[in-house]
Amino acid sequence: MKKTFKILTIIGSPHDVKSNTRALIEDFVEEISQKGLELEHEIISLGRKKIDPCRGCWNCTYERPCPINDDLTELKSKMIDCDMLILGSPVYTNQVTAQMKAFFDRLFTWCHIYPLLGKYSLSAVTTGNDGQKETAAFLEKMLATYGTMSFGSIKSMGAFTSGFFPWRNEARKKNKKLAQKVANTILEKKIPPPRKIQRSIFKVMKNKMSGIHTINCMKYGVPAGQPNPLKAKVKLINYLFRKMNISDKQIEKMAGYLPFELSWWRDRNWLGAKSLKQIMNQPVPNEFDVKKRLLQL
Ligand SMILES: Cc1cc2nc3c(=O)[nH]c(=O)nc-3n(C[C@H](O)[C@H](O)[C@H](O)COP(=O)(O)O)c2cc1C
Image 1 (tube, rainbow, N blue to C red):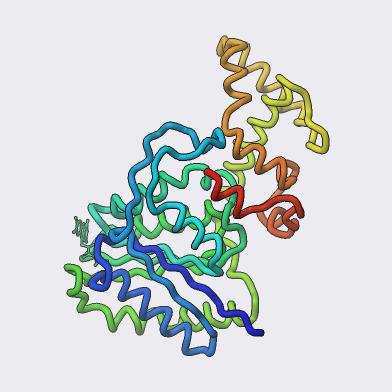
Image 2: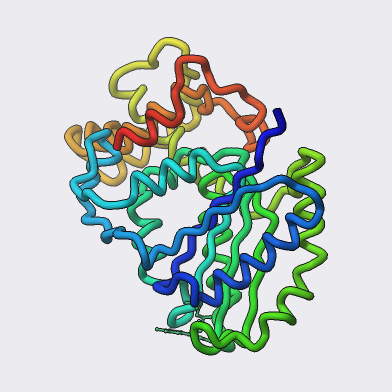
């Protein structure tokens, strides 16, 4: 049986059907569907969901449940199950809305583990007349951080107040070509071209996780099946710790930093990887249940 392609759109607008950002995305998805792609499109407006701001307790990184009980689990589950994630936001004072930012903050651990690795994605931004570039860049960064493969950003100005979007037709025309490219790429089961930001995010993440792994190994030894830390790295860390007078207690705390994320990287055998492409081509180990791990927090 042919599988329906699932697109999930999450919009940071407080508005639902009146949202300009929703209109921009709906037009785009309609263009995609004209290429014969059988798809299901669900749109969720964060303004219609309860997503409280992060309380900064760090529970999630220690594999302890989040103290907030709201709609986040439902959204997480939908993101894990979709084939393509569209993140959209209106520009509010030069950035995404507070609702969108709260949503990202609550997905703190997701910033270190490529939870949506290999899924297609797109970002969308509407605005009166400015702020679209930085807002789109931020959404693109988050999509890359989650491991998705983005087709880029669709943006429109001339969306003055919600429901008053005189530039709408112009935006649809402008985005038609990209929509066709998206549809073809999906139908041909190809991946969008790599982006520079993906490379820099991989570097940052790999450095962070292998740094924690190294300090951990220095303190407790190398766990079976895990790579030996680089000798040069151990030497450098020892040198820095001495120079900065880092105490044993502080080292112990650093070794225990981001344990949820470290076990993710270790159990997926990512610590020896040299590129994002390499981890994308690596199969998920049989005993590693992505959804269960992501939903337990
Ligand atoms: C609180 C608030 C802040 C806004 N800030 C900006 C801004 O900095 N620059 C701008 O050009 N438009 C700004 N706008 C206009 C919205 O970005 C624009 O109307 C958008 O299309 C609304 O999208 P929505 O209907 O999906 O909520 C702002 C609107 C509101 C309500």
